[in-house]
Image (cartoon, rainbow, N blue to C red; front, top):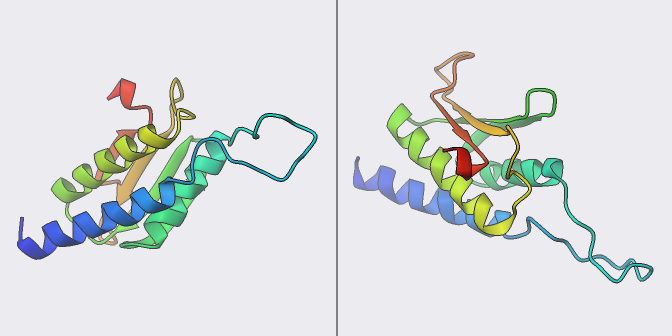
Length: 127
C-alpha cells in the first residue's frame, strides 16, 4: 500500500466516523415523549451513504429489499475490504440497529461492473 493510499483511507474513515456519529438515538423537539426517538436501520443505512458520499465514494445507494448499502469507490479489492470492515466497526460503535440483521455493505469499483469487490456484514457479530 502506498503512503498516499494509506493517507486517503485514513481521511475517508475519519469522514465516515464523523458522519456516523449521528447514528443511533436521536434527540428531537417532541415534548410529548420523555425518551428520544430511536433511529431506524434505514436511517443508519442512509447515514452510511451520507458519510461515504462526503469522502471518496462516487455513488451510494440503500437497497431496502436486499438489505444492502452499495458504495462505489475507486480502489482495489484489498483496500475495499479494509474500508468495508472499518465502516462496519465504526457503525457498531454508534448504533446497534444492525445487530441481528442481514444488512451488508457492498463496495464496488467503477471498473467492477455489477460485481462487488468487497462485502461485509454491518452486524459485526456475524463477521
